[in-house]
Length: 78
Image (cartoon, rainbow, N blue to C red; front, side):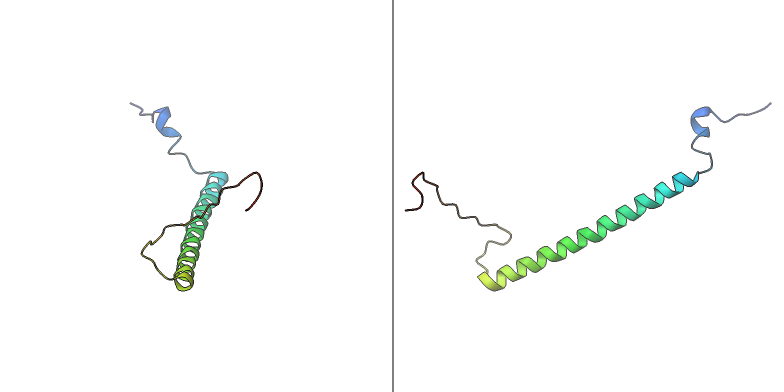
């Protein structure tokens, strides 16, 4: 009696082609680069927070962005 692998499983057991390996390597490199860039962004934000704290002092509002808005009038600034 001969046993045959079902068609739905035979594709997953086939040997990887060169393109599959290259695609895997490229995805791995992209993931690593995104992780590295994320770390750089976190360090840059920490440096900006430290700079703001040193220049403006801390007032208990950690991580809050303050924005002062002035109303615009049609006649210009008064």
